[in-house]
Length: 245
Image (cartoon, rainbow, N blue to C red; front, side, top):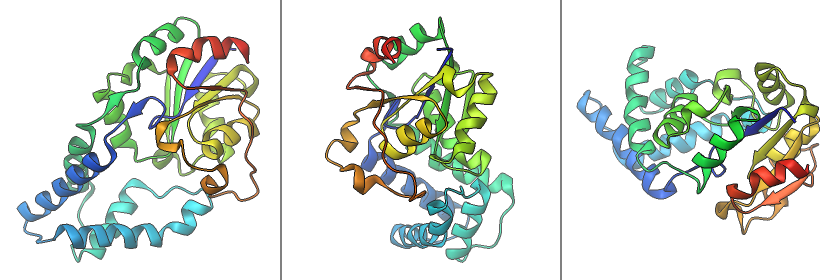
C-alpha cells in the first residue's frame, strides 16, 4: 500500500451542524444587508431550498454544480443583480468564516495523519464547496497533511463517480490497487472507492449511526452498497486496519 485517501466531514473533521449552519446563514444575511440588499433569514433559507431543487438532477447524476454557478443562481433567486466573482468570494468568505468556527479534528486525527505521512502519500476526496472545505481543514489544523486535495466543486464530479477517485489517484501517482480509501459514507466513500479497485475502510461516524444503508443511496442508482474491507470506530484504529487490508 502506497497511499491513503480520506473523506473530510464526518471522517477527519467534525462541525457543530446546527450551530455552524445557523451562524453561517446569519453571516450571509448580515453581509447582504450591509451591502444594501435586505434579505430575511427565512427568505434566504427558502432560496437555498429552491437552489437545491434546481440542481437536484445534477447531483443525482453525480455532476457537481460549480461554486460560482451555485451562488449566481442563489443571488438571482433573492432578486440580487449579478455580481462579479470577487464579490461572491467575499460573500462566501463571510459564510466560510462563520461555518468553520466550529470545525475541529476528529479524535486522534492529528496524530494518526502524522504517523501515516511517514509511510504513505495522503490525499483527500470530498463532495463539498472547495473554499469552505479547505478552510475547515485549515481551522482543524489538518491542511498541511495532504499531498493532494480533490474537491467536487473544483472538478465537476461527485463521489461515487469514478472520475473523482481516479483523479486523486493520478495526483498521488499511485494505482487503485496501491491505495486505500477511508470514509463514513457507505455509497459515496466505500462503494465508490471499491468500484475503481481501491481497498476501503469505513469509519462509523456518529452522524450516520442510525441510518440504514438503503436510505443513503443517491446518485448512481446502479451502484450497490459494498462491504468495507475493514470497519473502525476511531481513527486511532486506522494504522492497524490499513496493515490488515
